[in-house]
Every structure is written in structure tokens, then in C-alpha cells.
Length: 185
Image 1 (cartoon, rainbow, N blue to C red):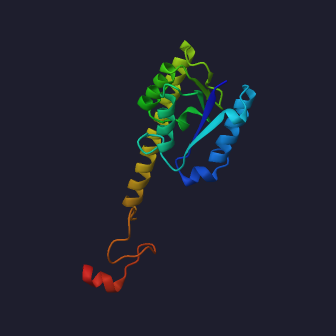
Image 2: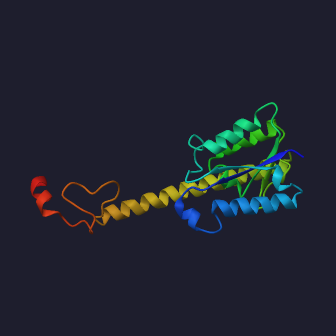
Image 3: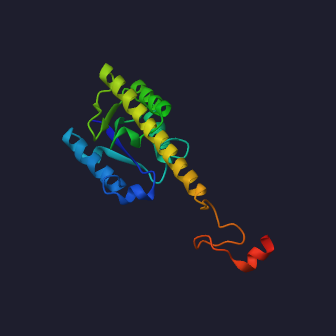
């Protein structure tokens, strides 16, 4: 049996605080799942990106390293395991590119949620990767829309958001600093 790569990722500190998404929990669940599939812990190698969005690959050094390693001619990595497909990517195009890379290198894909159980060459796997990647991208698009709507509502209510307080103000419900405010007016 070759090596199996476990990839874990968190987008934010908020996710780290949630027990079901912490890097440690993702890693633990992947190890448990892979042991049930016959892998030994000494055959597992770990790649972890913390505090990085799943919408891009550019800033995810560990994922890039994993993808580099699986393309090496003498690579002994035979598959990847992650908590769920959204940990690899929330972008349809990136997910499909990675899926293609896995197929070209005859690798397996395992997810703890059970959506992928090794073989990715079946028609079912092709359909599942498409559905999951579309849902993952839809989630992030909806999240962006909700955040934007919340920020717009906050601005309409007279609140200031983003960056340091404007000159003449401080963060106390936007009370004015009279000394600085004289210069501003």
C-alpha cells in the first residue's frame, strides 16, 4: 500500500472554534476513516492550510505542495482524504481540475462524509464531483450575497465599517472627537 495524503483546511478562526470543523477534528476523523479502509497511520502524510478561503488555490501552499507531489513520477501517494470535498475547493473549476489530476495519476479520493470512497473512475463519481462542486460554489456565492447585504444594511443605518475610524472619529458608536473634528469641519 502506498501513502495516503490527508488534507485539512479552515477558512477562519470562527471555524476553528467550532468543534466539527477544527483542523484537529478533521485530521482525527480522516485518520479514523482511513483506518477503517485498511490504511495504517504510518502510511498517512498530512497537509494543512489554516485560515485560507476555499475559493482560491493561489494562497494555499500546502494544497499546492500536495498537488506538486502527486504529479512527481516517483510519487508513492495513492490517494487523498479530506473531511468533505469543500475542504479541497469551493470553486467548480478548481475542483474539476483537481479531479482531472487525480484521474490522470490514477489516485483515489476519500471523504469522511462518504461521498467518495476511493474509486473516482465510475460514472457515479463524475456526477457526484459535479454536484458537490456546484453546491460548494453555490454556498460561497450565497454567503457573499448575505455578507454584502448585511454591510449595505449597516451603512444605511449610519454605521461605518472597514478600516480605521475616519479622522475626527473613534470607535465608540462613532462619537466624535471634538478636537480632531474642528479640523475636519
